[in-house]
Image (cartoon, rainbow, N blue to C red; front, side, top):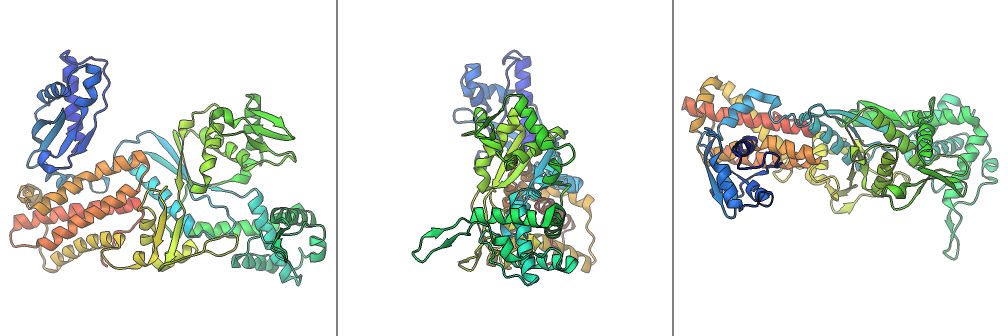
Length: 593
């Protein structure tokens, strides 16, 4: 209905242009909002005030002209002018009931739009380093990314979902070295495990796999490995910090590579990578999150070496320079706070070099928009990636980055410690098994992604009205219960009779529920435009409240055939919108609770 109001005003403005009362070249952006007070109408627009300056006329006079040229329609009761020039519209008495037939006719297409027609979008999300299991912090990015992909698809966009596998670089080397050191313990060596190594139980499991498959093939004496390695970080007797954990782990990585050789090192590396990545795939799939593409960072360095190609392009364009043995990107010329190293003196590439090549690869695939969903700790990284895109001759506007705040898990009032490196964390799998996929998916998207989130696990498990996902699913289940009662009583629902008698649905609860149903397409458009899936969650909570209020106040299976069918049609329409909205969020519509 909001679109109908906007179209009516647009038609009036076109008529004014044709009549010479408004310049033909005038551009206008019509804003229509639902009225805050129903006494002032159902919708309101400030278009007259927006046009006052370019037309050099009073908003009230402009509003009068617009209203005078509004085409007649049975959808609207009247158009009023209020205050300095607001245009208020009252819908016709039967307009609100029309949404019921619209929902039932369009079914799972209700709320869909053509907003994103012919626009190709890629969303890259989660992309956690395959150095350990997914934990509850990763779950928020997974849930939000998947919901956003569903939302944009619902709004007509062509969406591809991608996971960027960081299977190259220092963190993966730390993982492989950690597994090797635990493997050496299994061969009988005594190891002073590095403070900067990965310490979770899963490292022991990976080491056991290596030992089971290869025996003592990769065994070396611990004393030889640690002989020339810088001292690890420690606190001496006087409380002073000594040693360097970074130098220590980097030296151990070099020892692993030199001792094992490239083939054997790669064997351990790949066993760890494939096992962890396999677990990540399984966890995400069980969480209802699947990807169209798993993109390997390592592939950027292989065959045609896309990293070197991207850097050569920037070098030839004059965007790289050499200083102190390093190659630097002139990112400060493109909005970054300072220049960035892309190739170190020893020839190794930085993470930024890989990301430059990766984003160039994305852009070359022809996407109209690429959306990256990163953890909030990557905030400072946004400017340099956007700078690289511009340096490569592309528009920065093609990239949107959404930053997801870490989700902090609480059990009661106790905060749960979270550290992948130390191995102290609650996995996404544990959370899913404890509270279920539905509750986890819904709770993760209840707030804007950049807002701080405390995850109340006890609330998520509760079967109460305070638990929003339970409250919404219970509304859908109640509708299913009414339908079961209908079958048990052997009463038929006649939709033809229902649609002919929607006009008798005049109770305040019925009017409110129908108004709420009519808002769904507006919510979808707004949420899709702003990449804010949480609006869908909030809407469903409001819809559930309106339904439960209606359910508690009225009987649906009544003697009056016309009223019974009309009310059943209304709750069936509500049921459909619950299904459509929950589907976007990746939450099931329960038939019983």
